[in-house]
Length: 111
Image (tube, rainbow, N blue to C red):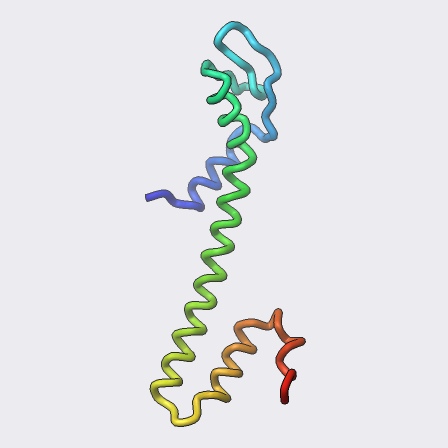
């Protein structure tokens, strides 16, 4: 199993990007200062793009997991209140308002 924090730290510790082919010498290609690779053109393209792409996608995945956790926690609160209260609607509304402040313009619609 991969660890996003460790993978991102690995990316950030590497030679700063973006990497581009700077010099070719037979099968070996210099991508950045101190980064020399012997490989095929397709692998070379992958390696040079991964320097920027991997940190980008790791950050997006970490943010998405954080948001999913926030929604899951809110749904668990709503579920508990639905099962334990005869009138859960006010609590559900309050939970949604606190969980989704980005929708505050919609809160008063219909009231």
